[in-house]
Amino acid sequence: MKKFCVFCGNPPENKNMEHVIPQWLSKYTERFNEECHQKTVTDAKIRFRNLKFPACTKCNDAFGKLESATKPILLSIMEGKPVSGEQINILLDWFDKIRVGIWLLELILAKKVDEINPGFHIADRMGQKDRLLMVERVEGNPKGLAYAGTGTELFYNTPTAIQLIVNDFIFTNASEHGLVSARMGFPCRQKMPIRDGFQPIEVEVMPGRNKTSHPVVMSQGATPFKTLIYQPIYRNCCNIPPEENPYNCEYVRNHSYDPDNGVGGIFFQRTNNQIHYLDAHETVNLTPKAQPKKNFDTIIRNVFKLQNYMMENLYTMKDTDPKLAQYIQKQILLNKIYAGEKLR
Ligand SMILES: [Zn+2]
Image (cartoon, rainbow, N blue to C red; front, side, top):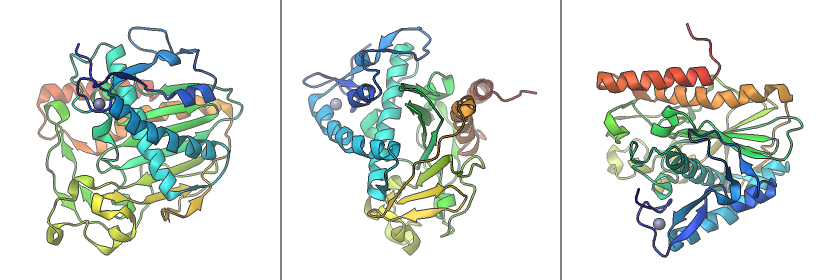
């Protein structure tokens, strides 16, 4: 296997090592010298301090800035302090980095890189698709750090959703085209046909409804114990000529942080089903109340449901090669088992 930079995918220039799970986070949770109890097919026992990946010095320095910007934001949420729309945007960038970084790491640990050629790396996936973050908390969870939702075939093929457990907080993060756009009132791509290799395909963009609607994803709403955060992203539609571009409208401009680069604004649901828009400089407290510890397993199972939801609702297998369709159906079924769903 050729060594590649976790950020750009090229052979690492002035080789350096990147901690896929940032050092500040494993130190904050007192796990830096501890074993990462992640189940991989190899059952490899690795300490957090050794979860390192080759990277170019230049790439590592650039992404180091994102790490230092993220730390106070994540800690604010965990300490019950308000955060701004702009800060949440940075936090969602960081989750893109973590999700893709852990995916690449898992592919290597599970010796899957030769079978599933990683067609993209961290830098390619930063802020490219709609984003979702669920924030939950359970009572009395001790100091700790873990991730979930990653050891499945569906995740190996489409790393769309992951969970990060930091002390008593559980963050469920997902990113995919069409995940939240339509429900945020934005134009939205039609379902993507699945072809071999999950190559991006041009699909028609439908005009937006210029208003938000609930429920957004998987019929889930917010409660005092669960905060939901959404961000539409339409970067890949910025090259459509303005007169034909459905994103070129007042509603989208008024609800975007960077309309020229296709970065939508932050929306959230907090304690109830009402969807609020958050201006870039406006702040809000998004910290949920802690829920009973017995709910922990149910929360963890949600990530597998979310992966299935995206595969079944954002893609279409209408023109998919029957063999590939069968393979994906099998992965969906496996995820249902992990999600604890009763099978017929
Ligand atoms: Zn690089």
